[in-house]
Image (cartoon, rainbow, N blue to C red; front, side, top):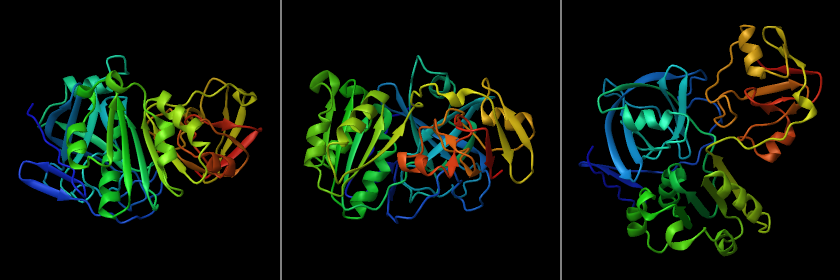
Amino acid sequence: MQSNEFELAGCLSLIYGLKIYNSKWDPVRVVRGAFMDGSGGPVTRRMRVVAKTVVARDVVAVRLAEPDGGPVPAWTPGAHLDLVLDAGLIRQYSLCGDPADDRELTVAVLREAAGRGGSIRVHDKLEEGDLVEVGGPRNNFALVDAPGYLFVAGGIGITPLLPMIGAAAAAGRPWRLLYGGRTRASVAFAGDLAAAHPDRVAIHPRDGHGLLDLEAALAAAAPGTAVYCCGPEPLLQAIEAAVRGHAGLTLHVERFAPKAVAATTADGEFEVESARSGTVVTVPASASILDALEAAGVRTEYSCREGTCGTCEVAVLAGVPDHRDSVLTEEEQAAGDVMMPCVSRCLGARLVLDL
């Protein structure tokens, strides 16, 4: 592996060799769960690993390109890719390059020894020149148009925020970044971020500063500020609690893992009807809606199977869903018109889904 430098100036500039890409922000609406090439259907492709570089302790950046050198799929800040690393081993990684670069897609992966094997596969097995199956991009974490932004990152949670920072800067919007991690050496891209934006970026690794001062950062944010946070669950829980005391701020979070959900009466058996085929399946307490639909031959797109990626989102035509995902906002869950069948269930006896 070779060293790699990321320069982040007024608009995000990612320098790979002699190529410089500058992002330009066009705030468009991105449909969560939909693939972004406009086809409306699933997109999977084989892409080639053209570079794999160390960017921090236990963090590698992986750059992917089309094998024929053609353009890569378009994406917007906040999007992620599915990497199919082995049979049954599908992992989601946020895109952290430049959306204006139509030749390469870049993800950064933290090695997690206690994880489920995806990061170990990327770090130890994936090599330059390899072909890897890729799904997406998809965006559950799109950057909304706002008068200003506060970005809060914990560790590898910086990855989806990097292109957002570039977009906000390119649009001339005020923004600040509060960035924490275990140690300075493990905080990816920290040096270049701080050097490029010393008045906007605060790097506070835990070994030197303790926990992030979320209250101070939120108190300093102007009304109307969009707060974007990505990181480990304790950070997300802390900022969700803290932002309740700050009217005028809107919080957007992305999780690495599903939220804990308490058992409810909806853990019992119920029926699900596929409106398009007319198929009716019984969902037992021991299975998910997705499991039951698959067993009955009803095709449903999915990826993570844990309610974090948004791939399986489906419209609810009748019935009341019991939401257990980590993607929909509280308002979206209350509306009850869409759900994630990989984890969510039914609060009644029957659901009718647009499948």
